[in-house]
Amino acid sequence: MVSITRNIRFIGTEDDNLDMFEGQYPLVNGISYNSYLIEDERIAIVDSVDIRRCGDWLAALGEALEGKMPDYLIVQHMEPDHSGSIHELLMRYSDLKIVATAKAIAMLANFFDDIDFSPRTVAVKDGDTLSLGNTTLRFITAPMVHWPEVMMTLDETDRVLFSADAFGTFAMSSGCGWDDEARRYYCNIVGKFGASVQTVMGKLTGLKFDMIAPLHGPVLKDDLAHYWTLYDKWSRYEPETRGVLVAYASIYGGTAEAARRLALMLREQDAGEVVLFDLARHDVSYAVAEAFRMSHMVLCSVTYDGSVFPAMHTFLDHLARKNFRNRVVGVMENGSWAPAAGRLICDAVLKMKDMTVVDPMVTLHSRLHNCDLPVIRELAGAICKTSRC
Image (cartoon, rainbow, N blue to C red; front, side, top):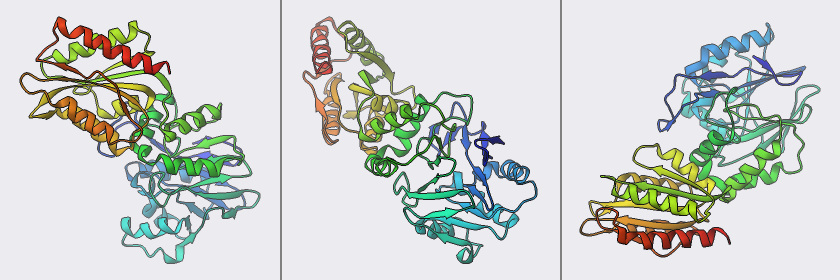
């Protein structure tokens, strides 16, 4: 339990015993389920936590309340990692009112079928306010960031923005850096919905807040412009960094060696930062985050069953699902008798919006040969030329 302001306390929980978030994203720094208590003449709880940490959360809440009874539960997002403990909360505080969007209220029955929510809910719309006494809460709807029922809550008195999943991160609430794991979180969880993020950022522009309190990761207090700028870039699908992600999928090492030589040539020709990424040996969520970060990408794949290697196929599929766009891409393929990966990679990339594939496409036959080096160098030069535009 940590005080954020005189009236607001953090009562969330940390989970260092969960290996995969949403069943697919590796957690190396744990995850937090953030919940907040706002005390005034009336008391509001902002979101509950995953049922995995319900007992710890209820204990922290009881300690913070010191015998007082809460009046409201603000439900900003109905995903189970934030709504999972609502049933247990209502069993303990039966007079509690749930404040949420109409879509969130409609979802309650999806998760809890043994409670009559009709007398317990207060539906709010975009711009509605709730007075707790001296504290005024303003609700900002944020549909499809990243579910349709989402809203944010602005404490206009203490100038704290409770941002739901926005500005969250794959990390616990303290002790971890923000940028890398927030990027991985954004690109893989919210990335498809950049237009929706831009819409809510437009609503927030002009509102006054000094802190951002998300549902995962640390409360952000310093240099909010830094976090805002990155979120703006990510949601516009604009790169952060001038540089090249060289992502490869190799079987026996031939494609990997060619990718390494290409990376060396890119560095020699001042392509900016160069990141070499083995798609077969690292989780795809990290590759997606790097693709969002970098201005350029070279995709290197062996041909497998007449198609691209499965790890490359998975990467391309994830990029497409996240509406990835606005990048310059080079392609390298490998095949012992019928190279096909390059054409299929180009087809997949060009289905994405505002993508440019540069020539030449490099074709290897089984492994890297000395005669391949000039065309690899030519590809590196083409990438570097566009990186200076």
